[in-house]
Length: 433
Ligand code: URA
Image 1 (tube, helix red, strand yellow):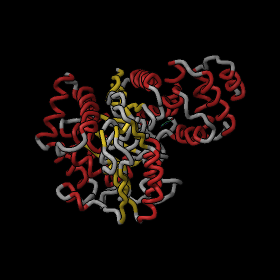
Image 2 (cartoon, rainbow, N blue to C red; image 1 turned 30 degrees about the horizontal axis):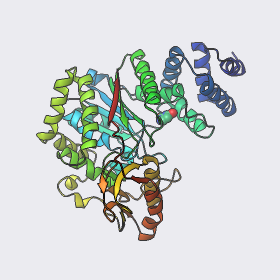
Image 3 (cartoon, helix red, strand yellow; image 1 turned 45 degrees about the vertical axis):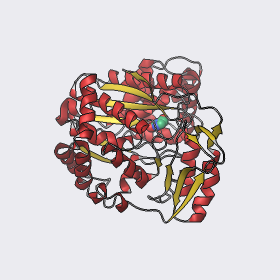
């Protein structure tokens, strides 16, 4: 078999055989297929697509290219969620303790922020003492005892995807549903959970700008999961505007605690409750109605907040901030942004606001940049709100006033005002099962 013939076949729009796909993945992982050949094949897939069988074979080959986590000891209770990435997306910090408090078992691996989007591991590291690396034994024991553990992704999980994703990033081949679906699902399947809920974002801050594209990606990922024998559902949610009021690591931890206390942003609560209920439905095999009730109970009874506290302590974190949020990292400088006119907030471009947050120090421009955990933005108004000239729109937090002022223009440019209220966008567009 020759990689040249495989590239040529896909360039002509023909389906590849399972053997050809496995030959490519094995060869790219061991270095016998060169970067330029993998890039050519990725471009051919971008242009000509893959059918369902090809996508499943590609995903399983990438899953099997490295370590896989065995969660069979938790049976059907093992649960995981994945978000395709967003701005202000702190849902994992809320959903994980809700689901664990109801008996689900989340031995979860998460990522760091990427570009304008945040990452769960960075948010957790804003908590004093929190360890995001655990030994495999600690990881399993903690999941057994507390119901959840979240760590950074192991270095050898789906290495074929790691290499291919880095290549796609610099060869304009990220935007392909078969390649995105196989990339995400190879890691999720390697991470071992039986029940998986995928939060597929759509809107200006998401990979999938339209609901139709988000639906197609969701369908493809759910089909892959089912072909691999997992219980998978996808929920399509809005990412046109940041999720909740806070964007930035410690600021988002603070907001997550608020939701677990039963307070805070209604839109964020609605998205978290929907995702939690879907995961409880899958991993505990209960009806949709019962799972919704369990989610409400978990928050109202305080069980989810208690689980969150035990989880932080189990991973070495100082959980005293749960009772006193001022103990989280606090920024040295802040800058306030006011409405320049009367009217409605018609849009808040999530991607631009995410980029303003990176400028404030809450994310990385380069892979090895240090993060300022206290930096970020707290919105005082959201899309659809009516404001008067001079009303507070947001507070920007940073290490210095100069840094905060430099990000102000970017933030202000992301907000559009108008005389009429904008058309209301749904928070949850669809569920794909
Ligand atoms: N996230 C991934 O892990 N892979 C992609 O291809 C896109 C987003």
